[in-house]
Length: 256
Image 1: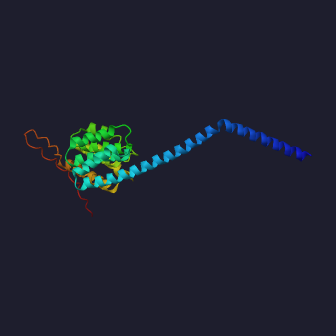
Image 2 (image 1 turned 180 degrees about the horizontal axis):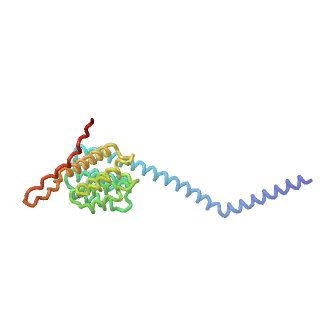
């Protein structure tokens, strides 16, 4: 009897739930279908947008590679025009690379002022990739090496020589050259020693650092050897005072 009552209660509960679900469906079913459709459409749209981005990036990458290779080999007007077009229409990453490549082309062509302006504009632009922005700062500093004073070069390179910066090796080498140019031998030596102490220093930069450090040492030794000795004071008669006579040696001991 108890089992029959339990079974009847379960059937009543199921029927009540069924009726409640039907009422909910009648009231909100349309909204649920619309929400599901929107979710499906949104996912499909995102996937389509993602696919379009991938295709655009692959296309821009191929165009940039071809234009950069042509510019490096022949420096033709067509390559310049292609890079300018990539700069204007490609996704952000390849547009940034195109701008850097155009600045490098100006530098190679001897248009140092235009190259410097391009690098500084990239370095100051908000939202630019920090790695590429720091590279632009490094290139701008290298263009200013011949004409900038020591303070300006420090201001340009202090952030780049910090531990952890990806461009610290080239920046330290450049700062050491600026220090030598300004006659700051100790500062130059410090930067070279930092390069040699860093295990991540690339072999080429490390070898140049050893050579420059050896040259600094040789120059200091040569300067010390070339320093004239202080002349002896003249005697009362205007002649150089004779050297003091050596003290008499002790008499030799004789044996009997």
